[in-house]
Figure 1 (tube, one colour):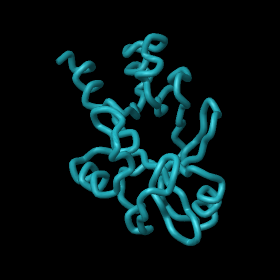
Figure 2 (cartoon, one colour):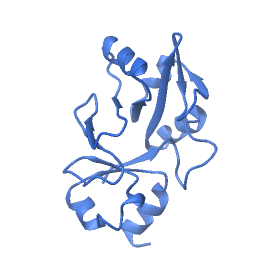
Figure 3 (cartoon, one colour):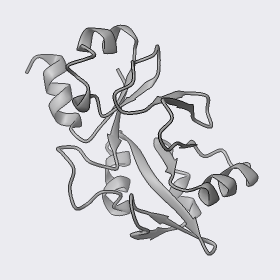
Figure 4 (cartoon, helix red, strand yellow):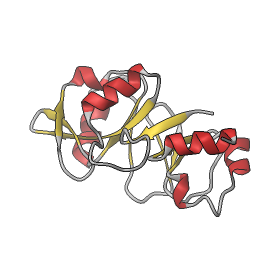
Length: 154
């Protein structure tokens, strides 16, 4: 099973979300990380609701990043620059495709085969671990460590 740290969180949402220093460390540890990206005035920023951390394009080239374009301008930049970065854009759609053709499910949506299921902790009563594992879903969560323990029975 594949796992993604949602905004760089391992043990729950925190004040260090989208922190490029921590994200770099997690990537070196072998984790994959979903980040929130904004492109504004020729610069890149990480941050869910606001542009909190300025980063350069080299940072975005790290393998293992899942780049959530937070606004249409960021998506437009990504598409028009034909880079090989792994990105997606969504607001409230049930499902979207990433730039590498992977299905990204919105919170609470039925897990599709080989799709990313985001924040299963918000819908776990509806979709069992059996459904998630049988569908070979990729888990993206703020509580990654907790889920790994649950799945392994620890």
